[in-house]
Length: 370
Image (cartoon, rainbow, N blue to C red; front, side):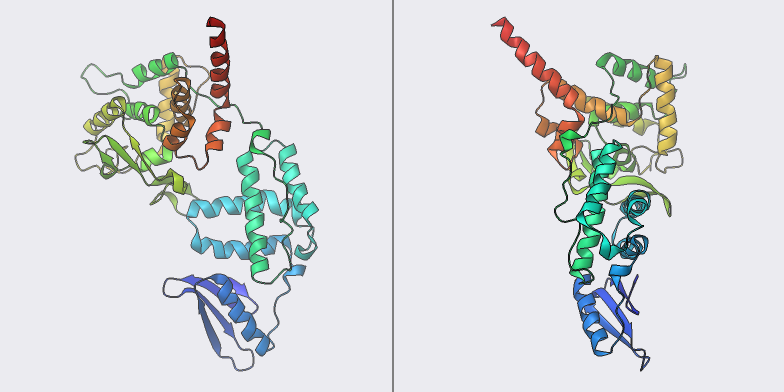
């Protein structure tokens, strides 16, 4: 809910958006409805004008309050994790750099300095784009609501994605992966596995799923007859609700169907053997709930140590390994990008540029054999 010149506006299932304004003279409250927030606010403003209700001057507002008001509205419309990311961006990257200026005094030069500062400090392109998007959305919203005459974010130059260095990523060479899998799938003298979720490591390496996608995967999302996996959920950790399963993956492109290799299918069947019969999740505890990511990470760390792997990689390194091996084998980058569920092929290209450059070198070397 958000306060707007003595009233409030909020999203409702029945009417889309609902706004209320209390007339200070009569004490009566008037309700306004609309499919979009902007439509409702416009109706409220017209009513406020007829009642001589003072409209708040956003131009003199502080940046902190300006974004806090917007975040309050966003919280009702966003997934918990998406909201927390926006809140983090505002708190750690926008407010510290702009809060000394009144909102109406912010210029494109001030916004550009925020972006340039992030580039100078070598933040990732992903974070820079998030900061830009939050500023763009907030100021665009203010212009739509006629609180500001223009957006200072218009015309800002973002660096090209390939101009931002990609931080080093860890992936496993084929021989390293085999050592990891041998260790992860070891059994005790009685035939039981040393690591209950050991075959989950094989599954991650042979599907390229994000860890959250894999841990949210249910048996109902797997078709063992057609060897297809339906990726449509994500396990996330939020401050407010702890660990939750979102009924949608990270992005719209993450919602996908991927074919299952025989190695991935073998891993699934092995995981099923050590679960309760009525287990709902592919990665399941003895009680039938989903596996905790932190516990799986500890298992993976132990497996690598036992296998003599240095330096250690994270669970996400298995996703990098999946993509790196496919690209090294000459698979089309568009296919790999789709399997990974990337929103943009440029994400795949920039993340795995090391493999692509190696392919280019090998291609040129082939000329010498002619």
